[in-house]
Image (cartoon, helix red, strand yellow):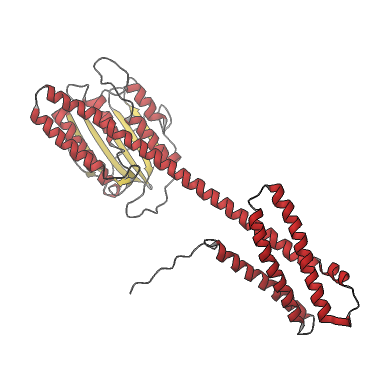
Amino acid sequence: MSVLQIQPAPFFASKNRAFWNLQLAGWGAAFMLRAVSALANQQPFDLLALILVTTITGFSISLILSVIYRKLIHQQPLITWGVTALVLFFAVLLHASIDAWVQGVYYGAARETSFAQRVIGLLYLPLTLLGGWSALYYAINFFLTVERQADRLERLEAQATAAQLAMLRYQLNPHFLFNTLNSISTLVLLKQTEPANAMLTRLSGFLRHTLIAEPGSQVTLAQEIETLQLYLDIERMRFEERLRTHFEIEDAAMDAQLPSMLLQPLVENAIKYAVSPQEEGARISLTARVIGGRLRLMVEDTGPGADEPLLFDRLDAIAARAEMRAGHTPGQPVSTGVGLANIRNRLAQAYGDTHIFETRSEPGGGFTVLIEIPFTSAAEPELHPAPAPAPTPSGSAAVIPLNPPQRTAGGSA
């Protein structure tokens, strides 16, 4: 038999209910405190009736004050505090006057004091109770206002981040279509109808697959690789044996979550600057591992690399990479400047300072892109991200080791 789990609700989830709970508890505690004090001092038992009347008076006056304060709390500060002080003065005077009259009835001729004397002598108690009640009322409402504004700001920031991620994701499809449709147009101009139709079919399958995911959403690495394979099927129609791929994915990394369409721009960049310029083509390798609560992704190509060895970290990596490889030199393709900058912005929006982005080029050729993000399994979404390790110092030539047992997914084409 399944047990219904009761989720505790915040105390102020219902402001009206919280008000009555505090009202009854506060004035009830005040009555109990005065009653115990009277009995401890061996006062007559019927004095409890007098204390009860006094407590009910304070309870009733505080209800009237709550209605007035509810109107004043939204006014200008000068009006709020000035009128509050005035209203509180009359409330205390009214409370003391009622107490003085009730005591006059209760004690009768036993005490030879005038009404004014009793009022003055009793002012301290309502002043303490109603003054404390008023301060607590404004303090609680101020706290709720600040909390509500903080929640609204948090929601607005989340919406802004989601909108930014969606905008960045929407950039990818036109960027990819621009290159693919150019290839199809070339095939049509060359009257290679059959390859053009095959590429169109694969393109429709790729777009159908990528549009399933919501913009800004996260997918598992297995789903991302499936999408990437669809993209590579399209590119193999252009480059055939010149495009060679090799995937090494750890089993533990297959369920890792990452932003959708994160790897495709990196592979597209490798094809553009490694496979396309070289007559013999190039090999593109993708490696994925889980290390210390973080997902490490590495995309490597055997292309010409950059003009000189460089090592970057975090956000500067892609910007420098794009500028370095997007030069309009003869024989090189022209970059639209969208894909790599898109990756930089998406990682910054999704992970802030908890991610690493590094690129490295060897003097003899080849280019490597390294991404590290907090590991979150699709089966365990509540896993807390691990802190980002210190980036590799600039100028270092150390290679990140990739020697533990790994799963091979894919092969040479």
